[in-house]
Figure 1 (cartoon, rainbow over the protein chains, first blue to last red):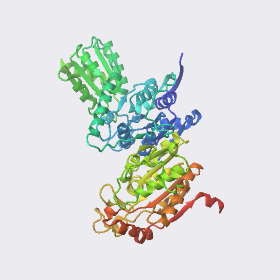
Figure 2 (figure 1 turned 135 degrees about the horizontal axis):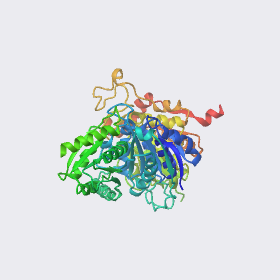
Figure 3 (figure 1 turned 90 degrees about the vertical axis):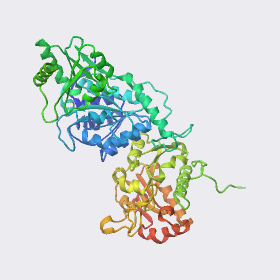
Figure 4 (figure 1 turned 60 degrees about the vertical axis):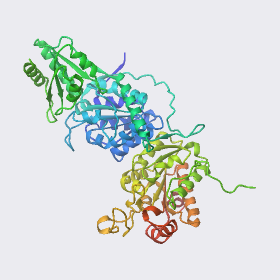
Length: 352
Length: 250
């Protein structure tokens, strides 16, 4: 049986990263994710790795880019305002096809916002976030166990697609404590990596860049990246709970999906047939799963800790196949299972 | 007959794209000569910056990583931490290093990253068409200081070598020029020393090159060369501002 340990969500991320073979962490302090750099500072040197507290978020992501360009697993973590600063580097990494893991234990905005949990960074995470026509894979855990598991997964995906991968949690998922089963994966198989920079001994010199000025060169590059993003569709992950007989399906991700699961149990106890679809990959988005679910019911409600972001992807996925309502809870108060259950009932009534 | 002069092995045999009279080509050659001198071509990972210098990967026959504008020192930090066995250098202009990348160079220097920094100061943004740089001299006309840089509201030329010398992690900081053979020989020595700082794990080696930009200065090549001597050198004094090796001896 896997070893179990009671840890908080941030620590689980750090433990997952080390178990995934990440030996290079670069970051800058910001609430509510400080246990990640703190854990790394204590444990990476013992694992033969490097922890470096950078002068800024901008420097951190560029250090990740430099380290990852040599073929090692490298990461940074931050929270919303810090993630905004990293977007320049993430765009360059996507353009130069350099892998890396970026953890966003998001807080609230815009601006300095606050330190309350929020899902206000959904657009930023799923639309690339920085300048240019690119995407990052986005994984959204909803438990401390998933923080650990999906961080490991993030490194595999980053290497597989030579692309930055975002793990999008929030203040709740960073701070809650739960037991985690530690399941360090076997060291990843050495892949032939004809792109890493190690010095050109015995081979031709290599170049990693994102500047393409010659006629048609960038067009080609952008289409090639697009094809790669299309291939990522096979990585779609979602959780589906009791959708088959549902009169209404809740769509929620991350921490609020966790709360909604309790609301769903409350509803079922009262004989209200509610189901849940929880996207685990936010990019690629589980479009087909939603379309299939529209075969069971025509009533959907999207619940988010913001004023409405993922609801756009749900509507795009369903088009006019179903009615889609939205309940949003911007930062300031975390909804209770009771509150969500009431909203679910109201939505059902309106749509009936 | 003994060969006394040849193209450095680390320099690819293609014509430079730089404007006539620009000193980037000379500085590229000096860097390549130093790479050859210490037999580092196969161990080198260069970090390119943004500006006229971005195309260094078209000229250096080494591995190269292109950094975002100003971030070369941070990118090089990541490379060197992951691959301490490699030789890592950045090649950056004044807009890149001394304006948008100030934080990155200051902190890489302060941490004493084992990297070598080649800093090219031509007092203007060359690639974007000659705008005011942090190094633009008082009164100097540029496209964004059309009446001349007025120090009362646009500040003063920033002296990076002197700043670098103040930081604990810097092993060597020098300002050199390549506008005549005498200075070129001194520049070569300085660059060698900055390479050695990394090879001996002493700390960060920093060399600032004064460089002509005839196109944006709107001068002939000869006049630009003379301008370096007559106007730039008095504003940016040449010399070694810090050398950990000689400090230890003191």
